[in-house]
Image 1 (cartoon, one colour):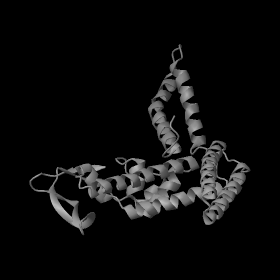
Image 2 (cartoon, rainbow, N blue to C red; image 1 turned 135 degrees about the horizontal axis):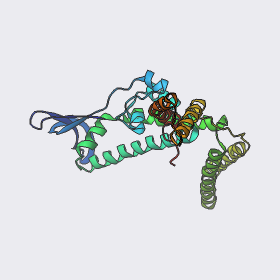
Image 3 (cartoon, one colour; image 1 turned 180 degrees about the vertical axis):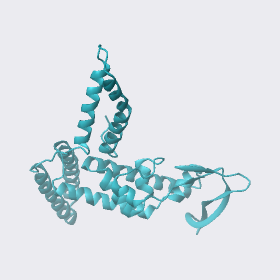
Length: 272
């Protein structure tokens, strides 16, 4: 994220304001000018770089890249940087967190509470409607991964655990509806529970997959070369000049290994 400093006396930033409409506090489209010390500039992201898996913008976090990207770029980054179900689930959680932040800021505005400069610039830059579309698309993508059996054994257990929690919630709601004599609700909840139970059975019968890490062969080859160099370094005999010169390749090999491991991990990998 690039931060552009602006003189307080000369530069201004637009702020959303609130007005009283029909005796109610409602957010309106009117804007007022207020002094600002800095403005956050969110760069336009290059879809071609995202699609190739390259670094799009080092200064932004993966979550920020997903939130502020155009839809096509967003989809390309999801495909290139979050290959697994777990990674995409964490990406979805990050998007939902941003949606919750929007709601929180709007609640503050409705209560006539001023936002900080950072909150205001973020709120002005984020596309709430676009964010909603991203959340919907990614949720559907995750559903398709489940339907297509694109889950590891661990992911399958996590999905089943969430399904079991949802099934329990449906059972509680069904019991309450039956006790209240709400026939229509009973019918709907019964159908929903049966559908969920069928899906749970399908997930239990899935043949799990194993993800092959990106650059696996290249990483193994570099590690083999580094192991050989480490053996040379630990040698207690005087090495020929040719062998000593081989050690000069170690810094580049280490850099290459780090770059491949980072790219292989992608975004939103499981915390170690």
